[in-house]
Figure 1: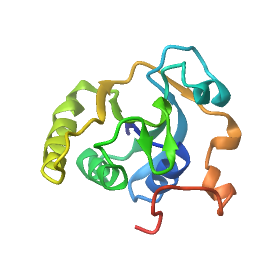
Figure 2: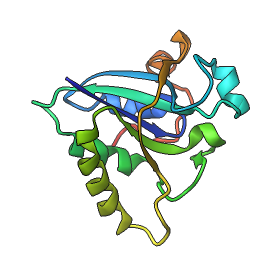
Figure 3: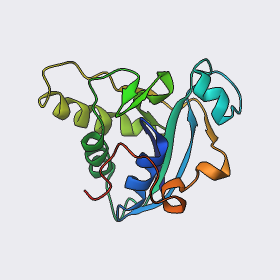
Amino acid sequence: MKTIVVAGGCFWGVEAYMSKINGIVETKVGYANGKKKDPSYDEVCLGDTGHAEACLITYDEAKITLEKILNKFWGIIDPTVSNKQGNDIGHQYRSGIYYTDVEDLDIIIKTKNEVKGRYDKPIVTEVQPLSCFYDAEDNHQKYLQKNPGGYCHINLDD
């Protein structure tokens, strides 16, 4: 099993979308690459923790490649906008890919370069090693499964 962390706006939708993909074994929402230790949702929403709302993905390499996961991810975000996805605005809603294995960097850069050709504006999605990930509170885990009518900026039917 391998892991990758992606941020693409509100973590509810990213988690719900990714959890439907065959080969993804587990998803968990949380706060990534910020400066405050173990922040709360309310603290992250204030915008001064430096964390991104993110989704930790555990996947089975025998069933799905990182490249396929990232191609799905690039399809649900607008990688040309800073600190915004859908109606969500703020530093915590930036897009990013945070890797746990440096050997994944070549694949990440390859997919990012492929995406560049689809846009006239530069890609601003962060690509960084994962420095930290703190689980979000239980009420945020699998949120859209528990609240099917909840807000989501992602088309979950794709």
